Image (cartoon, rainbow, N blue to C red; front, side):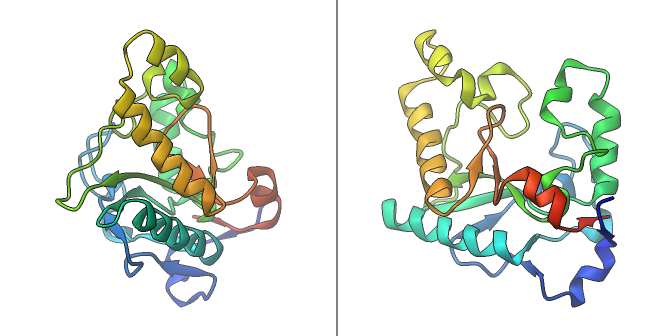
Length: 203
């Protein structure tokens, strides 16, 4: 059984850190407001940008890599540590729909709930998000990295949009993150099976 820890206990726990102070980041926590596919604030008073320190260190490295490639650009963070109780709300909404492939079953544990995944994009020096072809949490085939070649050939994804996705993936992978096949914005800081077997799930 996966060990769990309450979200409220993290403030005093040395393994979990705020990413708000990392240079080169911009916070746009979508589930802390209504600009998300649910249309309401799911975090309330628990809204905070936390990650396990292993993931936070890699995120700082990714931000440095982006600045090296494109000075003045920043990583825009949509979500970081997501408590299991919030994951269950998301799952209840999509579990009986085709969109369930985009939301991890809380019975297995989302990697977000271990503080080891981050959802993000890139913004330029003026604070404008780079065009990735879809927005965050766009639950369509156009958002899927595994379909990019097909979408590009069909003219549904432009050369510039694909280049922006590749820039994001390049920076994240250079820092040790892993991309997934279905969401261009989602990255995991370690192997998901290892995370589920060895780390605490945050409730």
